[in-house]
Image (cartoon, rainbow, N blue to C red; front, top):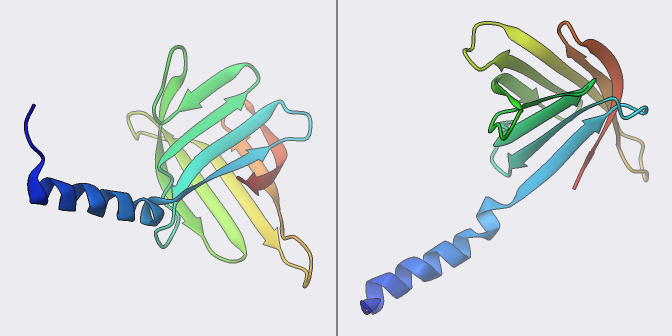
Length: 134
């Protein structure tokens, strides 16, 4: 067994303290009929930069980190501010946009904000979606 030493303890303590800075939120946008959904994990950095993303629709499944029968995809671009959230998804070769998420946020004083919009997957369909975070 190799002793950790003071440097190792300092590095370990720094990593523990950095845990809060690396907090994430899971956002899920799904259709009311549960036939389509997009879920993605975002960090606390400025802007919208999904760390991972999955889509499911009509029995098909896509992911930026595919497992099993999932189809590989890439986040082509993503944007978010207080009023809108937009994500474009490309095929895993970045040759074409295969899906678009467009969401508008509504804010009423004293009430929970509402995020709703559309998820369009080319050649598969388009659905109205409602989004929420965890």
